[in-house]
Image (cartoon, rainbow, N blue to C red):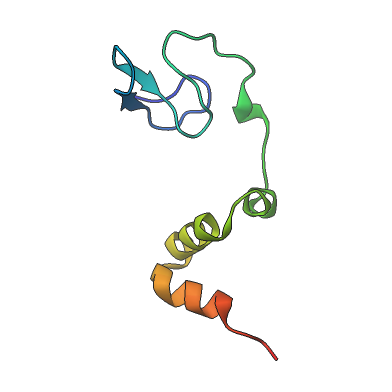
Length: 81
């Protein structure tokens, strides 16, 4: 099922007394109002990368470039002297 707020895939969150659908992209939970529609806010890839930590960046880039995470992580950590 897709999130009504951002369109990402919903996940069943079973950490509460009852199971609820939750979106890990925007934080929407079943039973709450939609709030502002974040699909209207278009982020560039550079803006998205700026908000990520190192591990998230490696995962994002490795899937886009079809590289292994280890190889990309080693390349990003290497010193350019």
